[in-house]
Length: 251
Image (cartoon, rainbow, N blue to C red):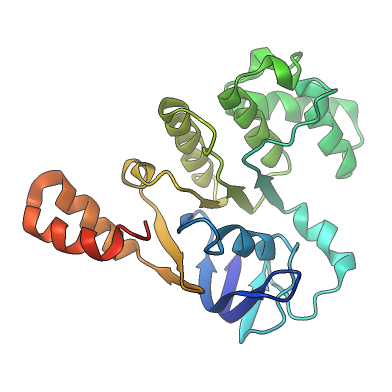
């Protein structure tokens, strides 16, 4: 198992409790959505997964087979190299081309041979269908194109997990759908994807495991959400009104 939280309490850096008694599990190849209102704890949960926030109160708190309870900071860089992290605002280096953004990451993570670096850059740009954009700067790309490059950067080191914080938040519906399709494709290689989103229609288009942050809790609602999606296809209008009323406020 890649991530195993059991009854974990997650705090902000200022000591405020955000989520309590969290049970959260991620295995290879899974595609997981985290939904909930603004401020409900979605980003805080992700920050704990990539070690920006400590987790000290838990029955279990394992990420990539490392116990977060008392994890020494010296191990964090090596663990992060097994992850790909995608931010809503892309965080590409504005003074470097697409190629040089990717080369910078590879060199920073220990790649030495120029031929290997060039081959890997070519491979990931092909994966995200951006081969023709290697020489462009971020400001010359659309939002969707920048997000594709951010995904290419995230998969450079063939991560076990991709963590994505609102990766479609600033994108139009068609581009958002294309990005989700790309992320789903990545799970076919065994990489797990954990992403937060407010774009609820995408959950029906690209089904996955669904967790919701609400009232300092994290709850899995995959079955409930699938009932809503099924009913909305017309199977039972009365049932969709009943189920949707109980959940829509937090979706």
